[in-house]
Length: 119
Length: 109
Image (cartoon, rainbow over all chains, first blue to last red; front, top):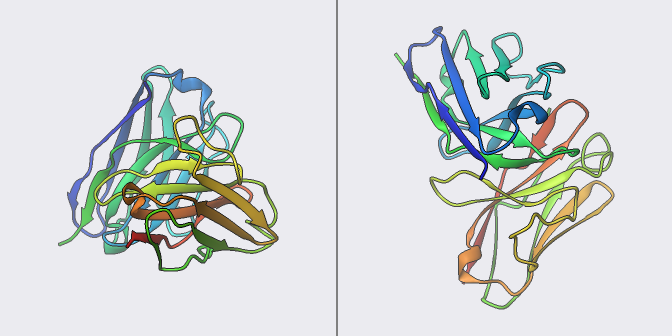
């Protein structure tokens, strides 16, 4: 079965950096586009970034553009999110999600990893 | 990249039908047939319930249905059950980016 496991969250000071990972299993990772979606405490979902199966076609939400970088290693079945210049507004649970084949929805989700930006 | 508009909450008695609306614009909901809906329980990851406006993934009960008219999409839960009490989020593709609604809390009375 499809499994996505995020890691790398934690507490970081404002202005700091963090790299999240998402380990995929149960499907052919290199055939699927992937996303990062976040949810601030008590708030709704927000799309953060996406990239296609070959690692190309990267797109970012306005609030993270220029600070976050999404990448993937298809040989390791892993998705990454490099987050720089973090602010308190980036505090959230970060989910990785798989793009459904041929469409534009998020058909499988990880359990999420919490990022807290605080001094 | 403004969020889509959903009601904060809707409620219904067991067995009734409830509908959650999701309003966007011609640049997102109205421009593409890529509206999806997600169910989320507290402390849990979201789950895909409807994709491509009205398609149901395998395993999702057929009491969940989706539709779209113009710039507004809708999720209908027919024959509401206690286990349907959760938060529901709509999402629309908007040309190289995705927009979520603010979420709707569905309460079973």
